[in-house]
Amino acid sequence: MSKTATTAKAPSTQHAPRDGVTVAIGAASHLRTKSVDTWATPDMDAYAYEAVYDPSRISLADAEASVRALLAEFNVHVDRFLNEDGPLTAAQRGQEWMLRWGCTPWCITDHTDAVSPEWHATAPVETALRDIDSNGTRWDNAQIPWLAAKTVVINDKPQAYGRETRVWIDYGTTTGELSPAQAREALEALRGFTAQLEAVVEYAERSAADDFDGDPEIARLDREAENRRIAARIAARTAELDAKVDAALEVLRG
Ligand SMILES: [Zn+2]
View 1: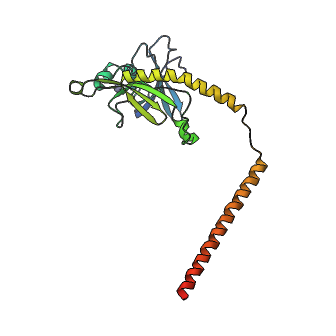
View 2: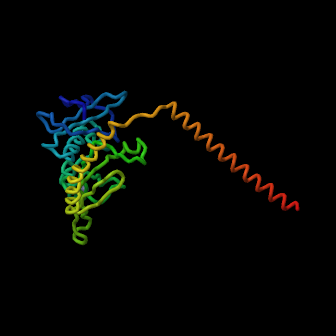
View 3: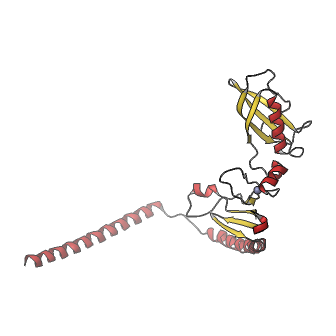
């Protein structure tokens, strides 16, 4: 959250009851005296409510409960919280969340989302470089990193099916779902490959010193000559077919 809250400023006067209020909440490390700070910002004829909390002192769940209780004193009933920090870890969401979903502390999946998967995943690490697929448009490539990896734990009904840790490595739009041992192999292969790639790039850089642009005028003349060649070939072929048709008609007419 970019906004810095120094003092709590819940509305000082009693307002008409407000339901369905959304509170923007975000983690902050600058809070000195308290673990949660809440304030209201005049927003046209209503108030927008915002809060920050210190994740080192309070879980998000407890911070939300605290904000909810504070605003209730002002007749404001919080409907939902809008998290402004990007994905939260299960540890930040609190113990209750972790028990309910069987979450690992580092899982960033929001399991309340209807389309969320049942497995648990870390936030991915990824190359800053976006995808380099020559078949992709620039826009397509900008959507995904060239390489990415995350740890995934699958532990649905663990008594029956056990618990399995995997490493998912994305290379462009393709994903490898590897065991940790296979991921270790992939890592070793990547280490070896960087040296080979270094040699290829160095060679290409030396080769590129001899690259040059063609002459646009000569290119234009070449395209025109090519077009004339194609036109001549089509004309010859058409004449050939015409002759065959004429001959066939001649035969039919007897
Ligand atoms: Zn999870």
